[in-house]
Image (cartoon, rainbow, N blue to C red; front, side, top):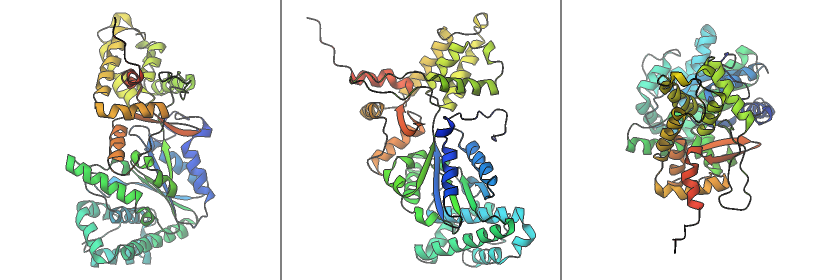
Length: 425
């Protein structure tokens, strides 16, 4: 979806002042045009990251910046390990593919391409190299190519080599487009994952090492680069100390809870503005929704989703609509209708089964503190990463970022704070 699609809901994730895309846009423009800048953009699956990155592209183009946006999974597979050399090479290949498409004749005869192509053929031993076909070659030979780069020289030497090729292509693009600011947007890196338990563990370690340890080697000379990365990286405080990280949050269907001094007082109040955005979302996709659902039912489902768009549309609303075929005499269904309650109860059970009892104290602490920063890069981050991936923990933003557990878990986790019942005499 693009921002000019009629299904797109402006300001879905917050007020204009809370818009992370506007914040990222302003930060990019505030940096010197020829500086090598690095930005991370993240968010849980289904929040609309790719759509928002397209909006960022449109905004930057309007400020006379040249934007090169591409999907990383066109160049690498999401199930293979991703060392820093694979990421750096895919960005360089993405720049070459864009330059080939937009300036074919001039680019293929430029030193920027001929030097890069010669290196790929001689040192990396890729055959039949072309700017257009490079993405397929790299994807097919991802593991062997990364190994060959590592074997060539020291990490510092090959980093400088690949960065120099990328910088030459950036300079070619700058001269051809006559735009001094070049911004590269690399989408879909948050989808990197293995296919088995061991693969997923290795992938997790590689992603953390690459983006939380080797980030300086991901820079491209004279360009700003925005990487769309897994959301758990934003939970590392040391990453935020060195790389600007912007997270696309869930829709705030509840106001940020404020404790009033008692352990069980963390009750969330519905936020009318957020519920209205969720109604707009359904209205733009299913104009006839009011024939099936009463507004009270839609609001109840939105609150049950915690503002998670995918859960709201694909699990809750779709679940009720499917069962409404057997309750045609009661349409539109109200919030207290057995069909609506049944779907919410089913989803509540499914969400509870995504957790294990040993994690409940952690979830209770997040529900109280609204903080989800990992204590380390090992088990602590791994646990939070899984809870984020399954949407047990949701990310919000109003002025500053905060976190909460999924609303369907509130009854279960709140009971941990209740004092034990005194046996009857």
